[in-house]
Length: 132
Length: 192
Image 1 (cartoon, one colour):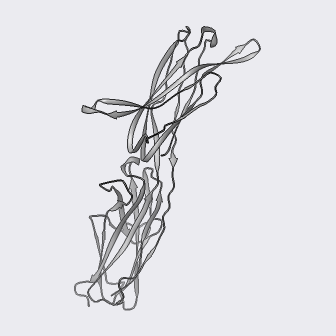
Image 2 (image 1 turned 90 degrees about the vertical axis):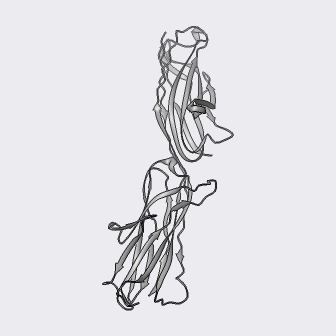
C-alpha cells in the first residue's frame, strides 16, 4: 500500500450568517494498494484557532466521502467512517477518495469570527482476508 | 395639539471578509510501500467572517404633546443585536419634522429630537441593568445628527437587547406648527 496524495480541505471564508457552507476546496486521499483495504476516516473538531477564548468554540461540521451530492458515506467529529474497498483495488491502480464538507452556522453569536482548524486522520489497512 | 412621530429602526448587516488559502500536503513518509497500516492527515481549515445583525423588536415610538412651550415627551423602541465579533454602533437621525401649507407655499417645522440608546445587561438575580452607550440631539435646522459609540465595544460574541429612548422637546408655542411630525433613526453596526 502506498499513499500517493493528500490534499487539505478548505472551507475558505464563510460569511458568518446562519446557513450551511460548503468547502471551497475538497480534501483528497489517493493511494495504491494491491489487496482489499479498510479505510477509516476520523475527524477532529473544527476548532477556533484565533486568540481570546479559553475554551475554543467548535463549528458544527459534517464530512462525507464520494461525490458532491452523494452523502452516503458521511462522518463527523466523534463519529468515524470505515470503508471497505475491494473491487476497486487492483495492482498499480491509484484510488482517489474525495472528501467534502459542510459547516452549519445556526446563530451568529454561536461562534466567534476568525480562523478554524481541524484534521481528518485517514487510516488505510489491509482488510481481513486480504493479502497484506 | 397632538403630534405623532413614527420611528423606523433600520437593521443593517455589516459583513466582513477574510481570506483562506489552500495547501497540498507532502506524502506520508519516504518509504513508498507499506505492508501494515498507513496513516495520513488531511488538514481542514476555514474562516468565519465578522458578521452582525440587528433585529427590530419594537420599531415605533408614539409621542404626544399638548403644545405648550418647552414641553417634552419620550417614548421607547427596542432592538436586538447578534454579533460574532466586537462591534460598535452608530446612529443617524433628523429632527422630528412636519410640512404644512403656508401663506406662500409649504412650510417645514422641526422639533428638537433626543435619542438615547441603552444596552440591557443582566445584573444580580437577573435584575435588568441599562447601560447608556449612545446619546445625542438633532436640533431644528441642524440637519442630520450622527453619533457613534466610543471607547469599549458595545458587545462582542453575544446577543444583546437595546432600548432606544426617543424624545422631542418643543420650543416656544409658535416655534412649531400643530400637526403630525415624524423621523427615522438609522442604526449601523460595524466591526470595532
